[in-house]
Amino acid sequence: MKYPYKVGISMPDELKDRYETEPHEYLIGSRFEYLTGVVRDIRYDTKYGTWPIERILETGVDIVGYVDLTANVQVRTRGKACFTAVHPCQPTDGLSKEEAEAQQAEYDRTKAIFQPNKIYRVKGLPPISRPDLQPFNNEYHMQCIYVLEVLSDNEENEFLQNLLNMWYNPVTLHSEAFGDMVLDKELLWFTVEKQWRRKPVQINLKIQNENEDAAEGLSLLEQFWKKKANWDKKLRTFAAKELLALANDWASSDDEHPGRVWTEESFANALTNESITMYTDGSFEMWYDDGGIFFGHAVVVYGDVQNGATEAKTEG
Image (cartoon, rainbow, N blue to C red; front, side, top):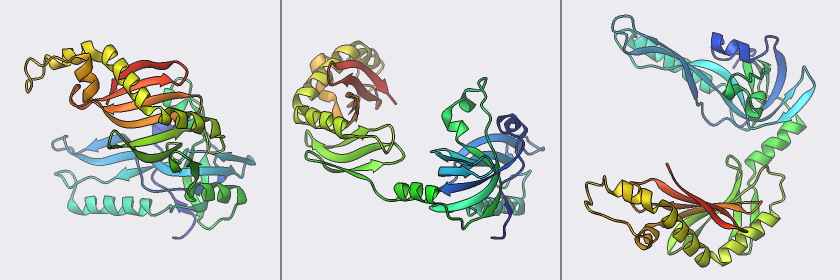
């Protein structure tokens, strides 16, 4: 690829007041895997007006951090190097096969610009906080940049390389009860699969950042696990008491099982353990398969190790 290389298409008008106008030069640490994003605009064919012939996609590359060379600032982030691109459409009355193929080819070229585990030099726009727009009034948005051009794909930087090494090298936490728990760096939890009531269940220890000392949280999780039978009985009983009326309200509309009435006992027995997530402060979430009580919605019991269960809800 020949540099400098323009990224994507022109910035849509609705994004122009969310980024500064003067570009900065950055180094970014790319952990790109695939392009996802939000469709910001759709143009339809003029004959029928029902088939899209152009979709403007706001997308971006996941990054581990950036160095703002203009402002002399380095930032560790889980944000994105954002840009806009044309998302390919299918041939329609308003879009020929050749035009659709050209859109697909351009999208494929866009996807090939960035690769994982590399450091790029780019020209981009810093973000502006927008208190009046909730998606653009948070730490995540303020750690993203809007990329205009890629200047180089073979940069070196110790700060970004260390972040990339942390991202791509596995991080584990050893537990006497669970063995090695592997850090899911996207969800920021140490996780392992174990058997519970003869079924596989996911065990998670949630942390705030990769540098957090997880020892206390792990100790709480191990104590919970040692008494899992008692905890399980208490949590099932709590869920049944909290959600029984709702369960029977749902049962009244169940055409496959007319006349079904749930009791606290049958409700509790219908649940199947799916996962337990412990936070380092001792709060937890226990997720259950509902066994058909809420037609496939999960049952979640929230609580903490000091006070036990505090809330039960259906999710999903």
